Length: 194
Image 1 (cartoon, rainbow, N blue to C red):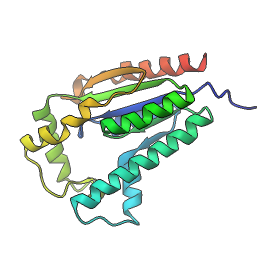
Image 2: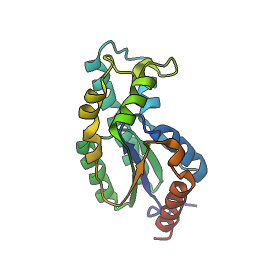
Image 3: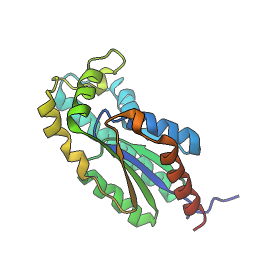
Image 4: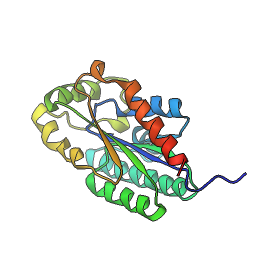
């Protein structure tokens, strides 16, 4: 049976680094049974074959990773499949995504993760020095709290068509993940009934 091409929803998970976006994307993917494409994992795979040795190369590989993700989104949206994209998208990348949503007339739900910048900066700095953090996703220069605040405020400006849910990730304990999942489940259900 052919899938109804109108039955697709794009879920974007974006915002500041060190806000739990990737973990939420994985959880949401499992709960909704919708594939998630997370920038960090794709970048790690690419870095296995395209070594990076400085921040400029890392940034270039990040941009290439996002381009791959947007290409995947185009392919899946064109055939009516729902998907989750997770990355710290920049505003101009939002313009590319918005063009796809318009082209394929698809709904979108965005989770914009943020929080109190000093707390996020401290978490980011701690995370960046752990052994669990893959070298492809580390910064090459340890940032100060002030540098984090300046460098990552750009991610607060991301906007595409559709509904946006702002998530305060200052404290993970205060996030109601079940409520966030329920919002996506309802949006997915609504997009299926179009």
